[in-house]
Image (tube, rainbow over all chains, first blue to last red; front, side):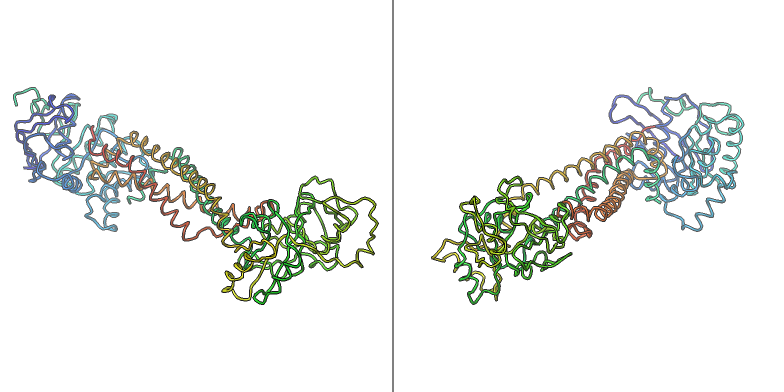
Length: 226
Length: 414
């Protein structure tokens, strides 16, 4: 199992009576790719924060890649996230004043797994695969087009060879042409490296890239009985 | 990589960072400058006179004696008779004696009547003797040697004639205009009151007062220049005198002997002790100056922190991103601290450069206009510690924005 959630409840500490997440049970096998759709405000980002170990559940078990995130110290969760989980946002995936190369290098710093020479080779390989021309490697990220930025974001999310990739509306700011290109390259890399993918979007047209499609409202029932 | 991140992030916010950097640089510049000048002034001050073991004058307060004999400030209470001077100067323990006679002036500058021993024995700083940039010591009755400031301000050259005024105000009406003096020497700048003094022989002082009584010129005087030069110009009294002793060990014994001198009430002081007493009185001013510069520095630290604090709100997305790629929350604390430290370090470097440049360019100006000898080397151990303390202080003040960054990283929301 890549993900195994049991009786997960979550509410923000400042609003103890307002439950944001209530997930009785949800699992995802290793290597599986799931498309989760749902309206914004449905606890989507909260769920992803719990999966990535940014948030601790108020109650319940969060098992990711065979490790109980809810039982780890925050330091260990940070390291676990750096080494095993790739994460992509809708936008602002890169530090705007660092160049593409350094953005990826920074992500690898927190996992501390690779030596410099092989890391550089790795980054160059990834950027080439993602079709970023070498001229753009050393330009500040803010000068890249949105399409380029999202592709660099894939490289950034994958540099540590994570087993799990979480993508939070990564295509929402892309035009249809870029969207198609993005999905193509993302899914081929994911398949090639046997990465488990949790892909969240409100855009149902993307669901035909996936075998498993779920609605957030089926997974999360905050109104249901505790 | 983390250093690069902090640096690039600062570069990305050039506008506000440069302003904070400037505020910080100016404040460090002020603090270092004040501290340096304070030390230099103190050093100059306590070196105003050196190599003189005792200063002797009529009985008065020790500060008063110091002020009028060395700084030419204030007025002597009384004179000492020539016999007393001779008696003490001829004691076996005394190596040399310099008589001082004050009371006249020239355009606001004091005139000092003395002997040629003055140029030989008087020293300042770390045993610097007086030296001439032009001419030589006085030999004739109507010769005068100028301090460097006097020569510069009044534009005198060797051979110029000048008249002395009775009394010590700039606008004295009783001039010794019947007996002009000739400039025979100009002294090198010393940064001490010597620069503002005109030196003449005791005989010169005697000569211009020969037909005066009770401070007023007697009308109908007919003594001619030729007669004067013939006359025996034996001074009847001096204002004070300085002593060099054969052995420093004897200083206190000689001092006691002079203070107990029965024929005339005398006071002997150790210049070093009196100078430090005088400096003590100025320490309030000195400390106030230091306090103000410290406050300026703290204000600059707070400015940097305020800048960083407001940046954290703008950087919410960046913090969120760093967290997602695995940065622990405390990483944000250190990142903001690192940014504050970079600003402090760069400010220190800039302020050091600025101060060095200012000292190099202003050194001559300070000597010639204020008589301040300020050395260029301000990177003393003391100032390095001061800079270290400033960097620490800025790191401490930066705890506020750093903690805010840490807090934001912990409670990051999408």
